[in-house]
Image 1 (cartoon, rainbow, N blue to C red):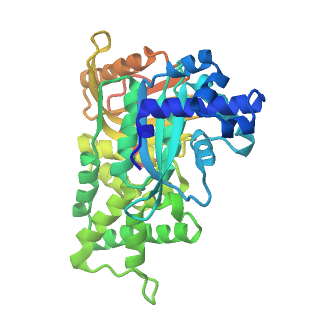
Image 2 (image 1 turned 180 degrees about the vertical axis):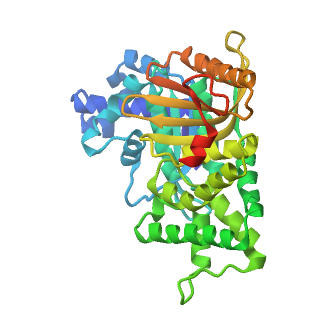
Amino acid sequence: MNSLYLYPSVACLESSFSKALVQKLCTKELTINELLEFNDDALIKKIGDNLIEELVKRKPIFTVQRDVSADILHLNNVKFESALLGFNKKEYSKLINYPEQDGIIISTYYMGLSDDLEETFRVIVNVLDNKHKLMPFVRVITNMKDYLLQRQEITSKLAEELIYYSFGVNKVSSNYSKVRSSLLGFNNGLNKKEITEIISRTLDIVDECMNKGNLVLGIPYKLESLTKRLRKNNKGMRIIREKTFNYTWERMVLGLLDTYPGRNETRLIWGPLFNKFKKYVYENNLFESGDLVETLIFIKELISKGRGISWVLPSVTLINEQQDKKLNAEVDVISVYIFEDQVEIKLFECSKSDSKHKAAGDYQKILNIQNHLNSLGHKDLLVTPKIYGNANINQDFVSIKDVCLN
């Protein structure tokens, strides 16, 4: 499908017009017969020039669009739009007025079968006016995640667009290279028995989660396929051939990085590796090893039991070139939490040395970003700075040793 309707501005107008028609039907200002019989000009006249003029003035100030997979047997456009907005069946009536209340509008178009023979929808999320509210946009983008392939490189791009809009910046990028290389290289400091135990226990937990029915949303394909390939023998053991150690370790690590934050299965399957990793950092006194510490904090946040956690990104670069709000900074870890009526963005910086001067500089950098976010006027946004380091200069600092021991 390649249609004029897929342009964001046109999709915005088409969805607005459809909702206006439904509103007229509900108030009986328009009948079903008129809807079926009238041509476009007659419908426009029936709706009224003033309302049409108002709808035409709606212009997107920001757009996110994705092709997502969904089961057409269970979802139609109305159900899908409701799912993205977090509405249940009793709240379908909200579909008419949410654009005026929340300043966003969603358009969904059935696109047919993808190359992988998946039923596909094109989702276009247009921000019309933020109305000083961040929550509606963040909730929709977060719900969209459940319909994407569960792969880090796909979901992180969606998270970057969320950060781009939320932070009001010109450029956002996240980088998993530090985390990935730290974890891929971690097995070099382990012996054969330790590696086997971590892989086997991780895959055992994956097996348990899959048997409990958590496969659809919780377990990434890389871990699912690895678990099926390394079946247990008659003695209940997984045999990992020495020449495949590196491949198996890499596949496990990349699968773990595909997991979604805050979910119970994520905490469970990260357990064997994370427990060994933080013990390794502590016992070898690696508190000033920047990449390892940042990886430690990233995993800690990813598996957090904190209610509402939805996104975690490592090594996020923020650039804003607007003259009155210039910004050029990298944050070690950013996480986004969604609550009933509030969005919380947590900014994590790892101050690796014992220098209080360096710690104060790191803390000021985070405060500058916090001030930038607060200046944007989002009334439903809470910004929380947190510094991990050994130079404890105020209440926002957390000892890296404490992280390793808990």
